[in-house]
Image (cartoon, rainbow, N blue to C red; front, side):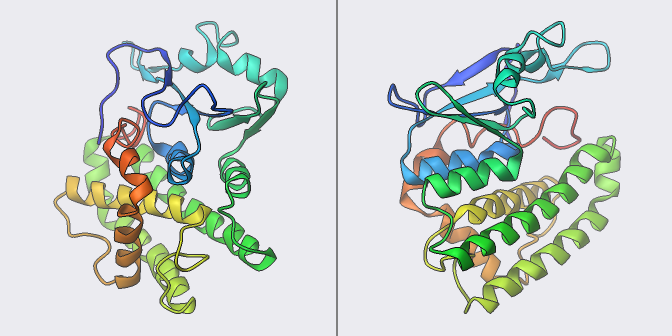
Length: 262
């Protein structure tokens, strides 16, 4: 699904949405992962941002080099400066303001902050708590996927565990299909005719399942879920996301190289 740079470096990408006017920064590993929904949200709304990534690569000794984030000594990397502003700092994070005075970490907190800032969090209290619930549900699906991608231990383990994984995906998809039906066969999960914050994370997770199924020569996991299939196609076709899908951020690997599938 992508390739790693041939050397590790702290990357500040500017090819997609960044400009001198950007006050938002999204920081994560040099992969799609948990940052993809945030990058998509900004791209969809046409909001400039700086996409900062840290590369994780094999260290040649059977482990992995995370020094882009932590520093070679474990304490002197970009993490240290951010930690002075937010002791909870981890990847992903986002900063906001000309002086980066706002520093938010934890995946759902970052998406929730962006959703409210970009007016992608519904139109009132009811839709806001719908967003909250859906983000938690999508994170449950993501955690199952991470357990498979990273926890299977090897390519052979990844292949051996595929049947069980896709049964788990089916259970999650059944819930999400039921939600769309409950909303009147809606195209999107909260507003109905336009995406809100959870839609971007759900789309990313569906796309990852499609890519992994294709990698394993399996049928699409969307078979039997017509409303989810409609949603997946509709968000992919949104005009303001076409630059994102054609650019380098979408072309990044799904996962870091510790994963059996990346």
